Length: 301
Image (cartoon, rainbow, N blue to C red; front, side):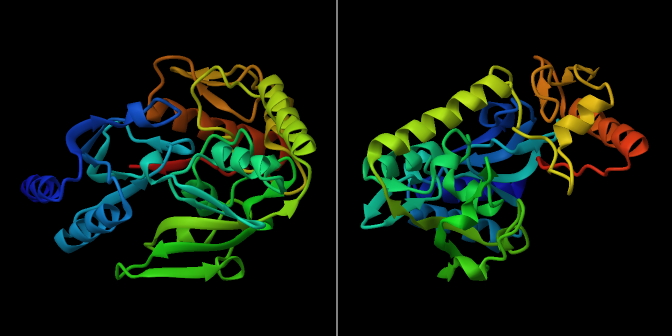
């Protein structure tokens, strides 16, 4: 804790907003999670680099948090520094067929900016609730599209604090994964290469995806999106439904009545509830169908 007090003092000296014991449930779509020992919100790229450097120099754990839409924090919270990359680090620029967005930009806003410029290719991402950093980190996808389909390059801070850029082909992008899962790097921005189309049809496709999400997904309840990755040769939601688990609950966590691929927070769910339910679902699905489910939600303890 002494280290954290010293870090907080350094942050304040550098004008980096920070707070002790900030409830992480306020910063995740699951609305679950205990307090962060220290929570900071850099206001620009320089402050972000400074915050990371200070944590590394002090040997203190830190976690880079975007919109918190695919995260499940432990009930005990996080005993280090949570660095929130918010929309203040969310600039979006369009140039020809390219769109460059900072890591904190909401993915849906990037889709809208592209549509306004008559640029197509990101429609599938409209409605994905995360930010650009998170989308690149996990190679987000929906409706047959993935970030890797349109990503040109990503700029990041490496383990030394140096700013680097790698082309998409160098980022090991796969199904819900990238090199960023395996390296201590911080995504700063991403550039997407799109194609020209009329704004009207682009917006129509975006509206169609939004309607489909609203009809099929439990958007009215706290969740972290799809809880499980798609197993090869099947769909997680269909397998869970096949096993009669629709609506099955442990504590405040429940398999969604609307879409079985989602675990939702009915109001008072804990991290323990969610993990216990997810593990139970995985065991039952494997026992009854032979398919093994893997959690897509990122658990941070």
